[in-house]
Image (cartoon, rainbow, N blue to C red):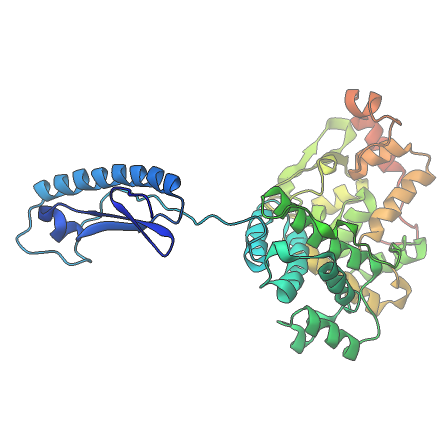
Length: 419
C-alpha cells in the first residue's frame, strides 16, 4: 500500500501534486495547482511537495495583492488574466546511465562545441556527428557496442570526397552516402580524413562519459587500417612565383605580395586593418597581427608584429585603403577559389595552393641563414628555441624589431618580376 502524502497522490507509479486554490481566487487562478512530481519514490515526492507548497503560498500572496489592487466585476478570460511573477519548479524524470538517445545527445554536444569552435572546425564536427546520428540516432547511447563502431567505420571507409555534392547526397544518411560513393566514384576519402571523422565521433562519446550519459567509450580502440599519409602541398619555385606575380590577378595580386613577403596565412591577410599598421621611426612600418572583429587567430603564437617589406610599404601608399580593412573584398573561401582559378589558367602552378606562399617565405628565411626560432617569431609558430622550451620559451621577450627588420629586408622576389 502506498504511503500517504498530503497534497499528493500516486497514479501509474508517479506522484502528482494537487492543491486547491481558495474559492475567492479561483476565478483568477483556476481550481487547483496540479503538477506531476516525475518520481515514484515517496521520499523524493515529499521533498518536492514541500517545495511546491512554498510556491503555492507565493502564488496566493501574489494573486491576493493583484485582486486588491485591480478589482474586476467580470471574470477575466485566460488571455485577459494577470501574469504573476511566480515560477513553478520543473522536475525531470530520472534516467539511467546510457538511456539518452544519440539524436538528442549529438544536438546537445553540437550546441556546446559551437560556442568554442571556429566555423570551419564546427562544420567538420557537425558533418561527422550527422553521419553518426543518421545511422544510429534512434539508439540509446548505452546500447552502442564495439561492433556498431566497426560497422560505422566500414561505411566511412567507403565514402568519396565529393559525395555530398551530388543532389542525391544532400540529405542522405551514412549508408546511402556509402552506396552513392561506390556508384559514382572510384576514389575514397584519404585515410587521415577517415581517421579525423572517427576521432570526432569518439570525442563525442568521451563527452557523453564526462556528462554521465555513458560509462565508458568502447570506440577508443577503433583505428583506421590504412596508415594516414600526409601529402603536403608543394613549395613555390622561383618560376612559379614569377607566374603568380606576372599574372597580376585583380583580386589576389596584393594579397599574394603580402603572403610572399610576410609569410602570413590567408585568414590573417583577410583580416588586416589599416589601423594595425604603425610606424617605428627609421625601422619603417610594422603590422600587428591580432584577433579582431573580422577573424580570430589559429593560436596564441600567431599573435605577433611583423615588419613590412619596402615593396609592401609602397603598395600601402599607392593602392590600399588608409582606413578599415585592407582587403575588404577577400575571405578565406574567396582566396581559395581564386587561387584555384589561377591554377586552371596556369598549369605550371599544379600542386600548389595559396598556403604555398608561406612555405616560400620560410624557405627564403632558411636559405639566408635565419635561425629557426627567429623565423618562428615572424610566422607565428610556437618557438623551437630550446629542447625543454623553458629558457627562451618562458623567459625571453623574443627578438627585437631591428632583428625582424634585418630578416625581412633579406627576402627578395625574383628579379624578373616587374611590380
